[in-house]
Image (cartoon, rainbow, N blue to C red; front, side, top):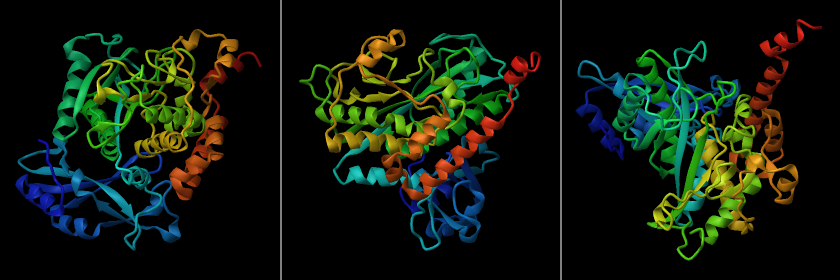
Length: 445
């Protein structure tokens, strides 16, 4: 059941109408991990008026212990019922929170606030940022390994007693929480799946992505299996990405559309793409944030590692889909490198900022590359000035550390903490002795 709350009074009435006894308050840490605590119905009015306090020093990347008091302030517009927690005529609600300091100001370390700041900038120009992500994932027998459930491929119709039912249950749960689904299907790799969310405004979509990832995992668990958004869990198979479609509107007008252009792209859209291409390398650690991300970002396997744009060509970083050529509302760009382990608030913020850098500074857009870049020689790529994305988390985080744009978008607190957290992750990986090393070197040295 979709609930449409706008105000505190709406939330209070809906809670009574649906006999809500507990409300879960959600927020995200810098890495994008969802955090939550529950309040009772009796505390709801106070929470909506004043927020609820918590210890920010216990949240990775938030505050130090000597300044740890934080406030979780629920956003009434995000109130929904958790469909899997409705029992015996009682309901469990949820709201997504903005994180505040004790004096009521937005907390600079809140990822949701990072995105809100970028959206507020374009709203001053009358623009709306629309986003439509395609977050892929795998179903496995359990969390202890990669035992697949099927050997299906792209768009394959696998037996109904397998993943089709799991996807269906997930879609019902999402729609019950007000999240509109466009379509779902089996992906390229065995046991790999995709549910595409219908495009919506950027902040609401970031909230929806966080909800989507939880619902996918929750539904899998209820069916006795395991779902993972790990980008590359199976060697030799396609990994999971989060291709992100995006456009800018002014009212009902799509600012990316020009009916007189051969590619139906406006000058604004071309500047936006140019901004994406110019800044993609330095922002990759935010869009592909874990060590395993770079096992997916390798040539082949349909992974977009080359900084170029095209229409039909899926080997390029940015694609302009032409399923419905000449249709204004369908005109958009697709940034293909992100994966679903990213923090959607930070990811959407830097994607929007990169595009707007191109728009505001009128970056020139290079010609599209419609050849399969995977099959191009190094000489051809050099001639076309095609660069590659970073090949490791270390390379990516070093580039982000030097990025003025990343610092400006994230703010000093998030920027510094993010670099610190990711460098620590890389060091842990670098020092780890893997099974591959033991198998390769132990018998011969």
